[in-house]
Image 1 (cartoon, helix red, strand yellow):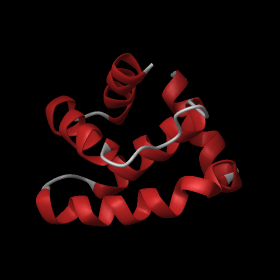
Image 2 (image 1 turned 90 degrees about the horizontal axis):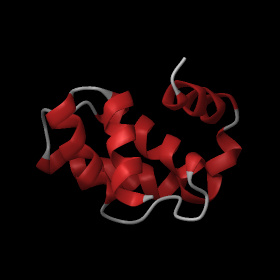
Image 3 (image 1 turned 90 degrees about the vertical axis):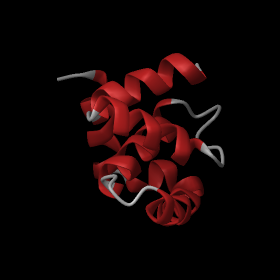
Length: 90
């Protein structure tokens, strides 16, 4: 199991872990759906929530939805997009 899948599973099982940023992520993903209609919004949400849990110092910053949306459109993989985001943001 990749790091991404392990972190994602923890967030799914314990959504309270990111409750302080979850609402902002959901709202920003909704905004993304208008400018990136072909993108899988569930995948985008998964990567953003997982990163918020993975890096509690940064959690989620406005605009990350567009960065991750771009990464998902290029790599077509949640796991690879998450790894790329870690490389960019960490």
